[in-house]
Amino acid sequence: MSKLIAMAYTNAQARQQLLDALASAADEIGVALANLGEAYEQLDTYAAERLEDDLFRPLQTAYGQAQRLHAEFAGRYGLPTHAFEAAHPQVREHDAKGIMNTAAAAVERADAALAALQDSMLPVEVGDPPLRAGLAQVRVLLGDIRRRTREIIRTLGR
Image (cartoon, rainbow, N blue to C red; front, side, top):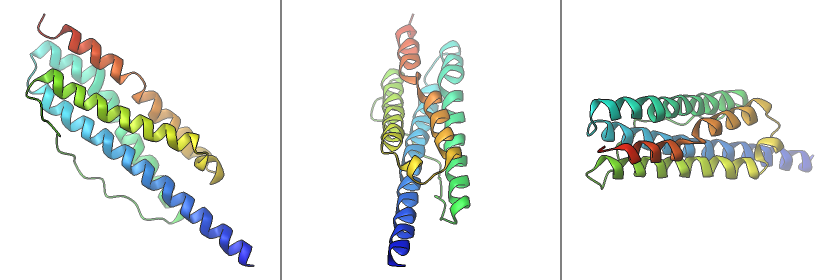
């Protein structure tokens, strides 16, 4: 009987650890979105539209998917959900290029956290295929944000 209790406690701990890591990654995506909003304000119309299409929309989709994934996983196991709040830009730079690089760094932190989560095998150990699939989908959306950011920055001021 004590083995069963220890196993249940371990599964509960693993699920909570997974939820916390997912919430942290989603929060980083939120920071990136807030920073992109700040950069948007400093760009000309063409560059702002590119930023919106190439960066903001995919990140907004990833953010929504990460939040939904978190809520659904928590709901399946009766765990508390994270209160996602609007992030504030973490801007030290006063130019769009610097702000966009700060946003890209937040995306990289989010992607690294999700990669570490996948590599940890926690999603497999808790036996939740929808969670594993959702993590992969969010990572696909985050996948080439750094490249897209560099492309936009490269063309600024031309």
